[in-house]
Amino acid sequence: MDRDSIKIAFIYIGTVIGAGFASGREIIDFFGVYGVNGIIGMIICGCVFGFIGAFFLNKVYELKINNNNELLKLIFSKKVVFFIESIVTIFLFVGFSIMLSGSGAIFKEEFNLSYDIGIYIMAIFCFIVFISELSGFALINFILVPILIVGIIFLSTYIILKEGFIFSNVEGVKLTTKGNFITSAFLYVGFNSLLLSVVLSSLLPIISSKKTAIKGGALGGLALGIIGCFILVPLLIYYTEIFKFEIPMLRVSEYVSMYYKNIFSIVLWLAMFTTAIANGYGFIENRSNKVNRKVVSLIFCLCGIPMAKLGFSNLVTTIYPIFGYIGIMVLVASLYKLR
Image (cartoon, rainbow, N blue to C red; front, side):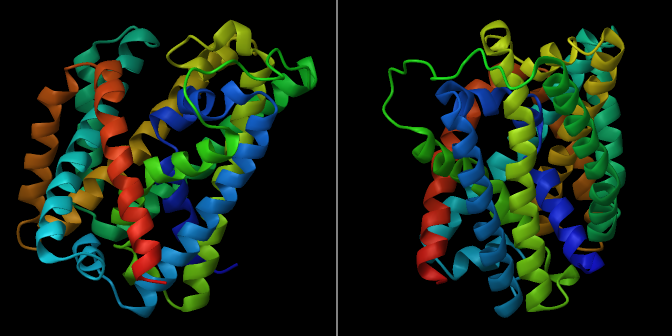
């Protein structure tokens, strides 16, 4: 496996593994509710992520696509492109603000520090990455994503060795909405596709060949499925005790020790950070050049701070679902038009 493929895979993982994924909240909502079948759903999800990653990156290389705007122009009319670009701009900004807000929540609730300090620290680190362009973006994912993976795998392995595969939620719960673990897997990919299309379409400079594109996309997607299973299994073991918590994986980490809970809080913060820089990088890459990149990066970070103070859970529950359905539309249209 060449170095560029691994870089791409880590960027892919870092983009998706943010607050909802690493915290376990999204994993419970999309997969945990189906009990053991949720594991099958997560495996399907990983395979679809792998296919989508390989497909998109292969097209980025073949068609020499440099950014999301160029990608959308190949799929939609000018009027539709303008509409979707406007939505994407809002989505990236809000997504960035949500990660800043999550940082504030962790600093306040887990480290007993000021909510504002958590927001400011993440904003400063993000600004440093943004002005470093693609090389800095790729490097930070190359360093941090392995730490995230090790932290999640350690926690899951410890719980499995301690409790065994004895799930408190085997059959799943009764749902008022229609659907099953298979449709949920496809929906979850769709809900992440808007940000993925923005980030993946900007990776041409590090795609050295068609082989690199396909390997990087497939590896990143399949790895997400595996990591998702490592998160899902302990959630199923302790399901009845943790399914109502906003950050269930933090609750699970308490079964290791309070000390490890502090460590996992840092892991979760890093997951938020990788997703924050993915949102910001996607925004800045499409709306700046080498001359004004620092100015755009600074304004973007400063503007994200006031929205971050609206609250983490409020932003997640009201904003994400709307963008998710738009992402599904873009994903389906891309697969059809670029096939």
